[in-house]
Amino acid sequence: MKTIYSKTTRHGNPYRLNSCFAITTLMVFFAAKVGIFDLRMAANEARYKEAFAAAEAGLDFAIQKFEDQFTNNFTGPTSWETIRSNSGVANERKQMDGCRSG
Image (cartoon, rainbow, N blue to C red; front, side):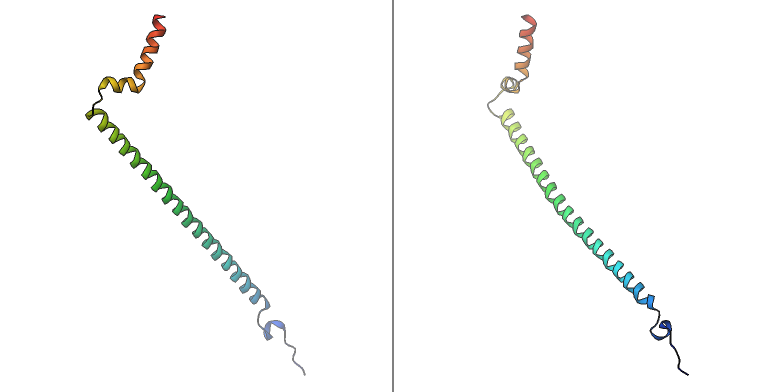
């Protein structure tokens, strides 16, 4: 009498190979997704650091210019009258006074 083997007893469960392949495929996709996410985060961090350094340099430059201007205006040959006339406040007051008297 000839014994007939079924697929499950002769080669194991046929769905086991498919399920292992599906799980492995999903793991590869998730690993690739995490890798891409990590690369994007690193690129964003590099851009953030570059922008922050540029902003910091701009602030340092502006502070230095302000300090130089302050030092030149208040310790140099200029006077308060020169500063007021150059600021535009005096010009606005003259215009406003001219409108009132006219």
